[in-house]
Image (cartoon, rainbow, N blue to C red; front, top):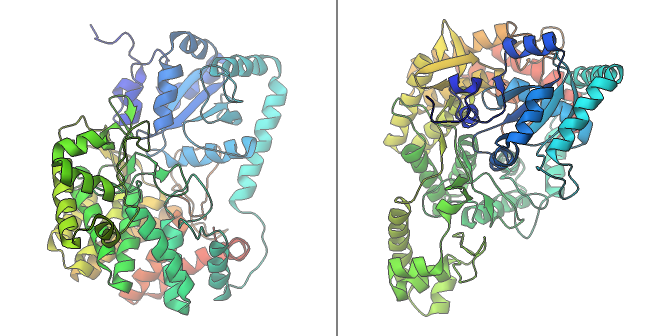
Length: 588
């Protein structure tokens, strides 16, 4: 007999996110023909719930609603319930997130979308509380309202769904007219980005703040191209504020997902592989340009964290770590002043607390997030000690508190390996190995490349996700583009021709599978992908570069290194396809 009261169809999946829901009383299905057939036969709407393993609010909605027997009964009676891991199926996430944003004006995770039996979205949202709260309707009330509308207003629902689908398809290739791309587009983009710059805290806009790795990379290149010092100043201020803030793990290295405040102090504590790949790269670029040791330290600590905590025995990189441990957000990372003094002794503890901003009151639910609001030389002067003495306290204190923290209950880790995110991190390790003369980083990069090309490749085709010895799902454009890019960087670090040859082989496959020979650019899904309501084509950079921008960049590099003009032509097709939009929305 099972030790669980409930076991649903997710129990046979490998995704940690889906397995987290395998014992809900909800009759969950994974996405697939079985769920779609049942919805069609029983004429029931589909409740599609999309999230990911490290998502804090996904866990909250599970505890409040999906583990609630009464709510589950409503779900099971009126809907066919489908749960999707957005990291395994970014195609579904892209389609239905765009639909939710059209319908509500915003998006996020957990995402809740109601579909007709043939998969067309007609209503949706993100997190719903269990009861009416803060202007949000309670989830049970939403469920009953949608079920009633589906029963009584079927024709209107189908009309609304058809309109959403038409708009999805229109936005994939909007008629923007012709635009000649020239260097002025770069200047316009840089100035557009700078208009949103936060001169006090670094970064762009107000809270919440996500690390703007791609915008910073672009500004750094703009400084290198134009020599305008304010571009470099913006990059450096942001990198310093983030690296000294609570968003950076001051003991173990690596960045949390984002900051809930404008000053980078209080993060959402999950750590994502893709974020740390892109952030380690911008800090590395800043070090290469300025030579400042602070940037090098952040790069090395971040990549050392990935080696220590995010690398599988086979050489793949894991996806993420949760925000929560023991049911509490951030518990693993938080400290009390008494804990610090007990670990380091009263005098050293007080110095450590002064430097890392540890107080009796704390910053987060009475506890402290280590951060560095003042430079070491200033703290040393205020405390009337030598800077060398303070640095000894900091070094010893970090080591001792890290040792203590290692004995705590760790946040859960999503141990699936995603091809795209591994490609991002492969490039970061390869470039850091070369720039920092770290042979160990090069070994990690080579081992990862061998893993990707052996365990996540089948009959010449990449696969998206790997876990428990099993790779599955057709790879998407971003998977090919990022791995090609990573292999090119590995070739540049080693000059081993085999890596460049592998990049060329994958590039040929990517063109065959994803190229849009009519509209230009590349589709997100392959030509033989399962039929969906829409075939997305993404040009806008978001948390990670879009597949089209990464493919264009990789093809330009490949063409230059191999002396083959055809790759530059493929890159040019992307730029021409998006030229008018790039001129209109250059910051995107």
